[in-house]
Image (tube, rainbow, N blue to C red):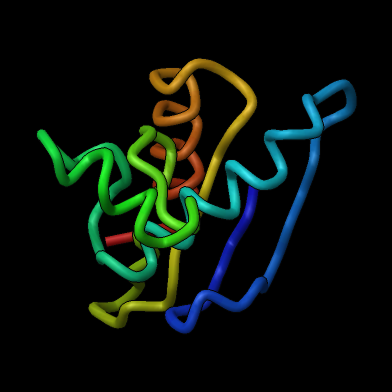
Length: 103
């Protein structure tokens, strides 16, 4: 799990025992995508889904599991979950958001 601020600076990071090394970068990129677009990752369609990640040197990702962090109507950054399937990552992310009272 990775949390970034709106300027995409790392705020918090956690890694489960046994998780894959590439999940670290993937969770950060999902969080960056959600923080900068203010939308959950996985929304890109068509050519945009390929060109935006390529144009940002893969800083932005089109894989589910990234969520904007909004508390009391204020955009605080993004949350990224990686290590499972995209559906599993999204499910965990939604549970984390609910536990934080994300609106």
